[in-house]
Image (cartoon, rainbow, N blue to C red; front, top):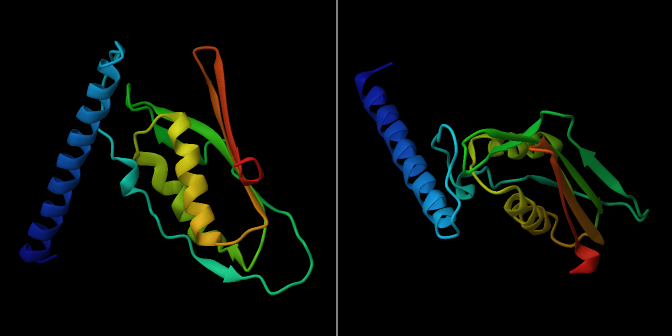
Length: 166
């Protein structure tokens, strides 16, 4: 690799590091307002804006009403706890009846994996994912997004957004 490419790559790394530190500090300052202090090691993480936002779609050209469900296996979906920097592993379930579009699966997989370095509260991820999918599907008959996280501290967290209840 040429030294020019090395410098370009170094600049990218430096920008990501600065953004990760900035976002981590903002999240910790936000929680401090409510008397919540981090315990253990704090690691930098990226903000939700750094997720892969593009989800490709394919036309749904059928008259048949079809329920489409995508569900990750254990360990395939994770993000980082913004207070400890530890991974929050969970299951992501997407269910919808297509309007004009269906999700292209390879791009959905890349989208799901892009959350691994994102620091966000479990309850914040579900509405972001819901909004991203709704934008790309454009006009589904309905869309349901559920995140269910591994038990931590004896608490199981499940978050669901159903477009029929909005």
